[in-house]
Length: 279
Ligand SMILES: Nc1ncnc2c1ncn2[C@@H]1O[C@H](COP(=O)(O)OP(=O)(O)OP(=O)(O)O)[C@@H](O)[C@H]1O
Image (tube, rainbow, N blue to C red):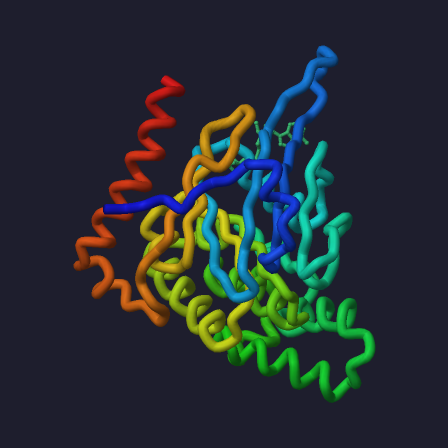
């Protein structure tokens, strides 16, 4: 039997001391419409994420997942509410949070190595040249890209480009990794391999991760908790599901279990319920 963890929006609870590494408190986001009205995207999001917790966010298209991630990244401002990271309010982008996008965001005129190096130069300003070279090499190796280090983005596959994006994000040692459908553009085989690679890295250097996905199996395989969002407009968190499998996980093994089946069905039923309401 799947028991969603409670989703609290009780104001009195928010005055308790902060316990999470990332704390999203009573977050609202709306946009002005052309006719001067208000389009509410996020309607009161409360979420706490632990220092080494891997969280997935699932919801129907347009419900506001990317908006939520961009607010945590500091790329968008909330209309009201607050995001705290490690006790400090998030007001703008910072090197303590790195984003990985679905469409890579690599600079085409730089090689794989130079793309990673650029981020390291920008952020780790006090590192020596030798330290920077060693960080870049370490992260190239982490995602098995040594052989492609001197190639340009045009000369490598989509899966390899995504590995460069991940290496670049990790190389600056952020406190938190924010991933917006990082495997969404990849074929199934490459996606599976890269999911495992990201988990290997995360299992050896645990950190807070918030990942948007449309794939329930990916969310169960990778994350500690799954945040299910209701449909937009005015989306909020519907349920949060605990994933009961310890890391490291074996995809084939967990898929055989009754808990996997129940969790998957619970998440899919939640999404179906909201989809049906839309029709
Ligand atoms: N700058 C903006 N101005 C006005 N509306 C916006 C803006 N950015 C996003 N929206 C609207 O906010 C809603 C949520 O968008 P968002 O991209 O966060 O959804 P999403 O859940 O990530 O969608 P998808 O799964 O399709 O990527 C959408 O209706 C979108 O049109």
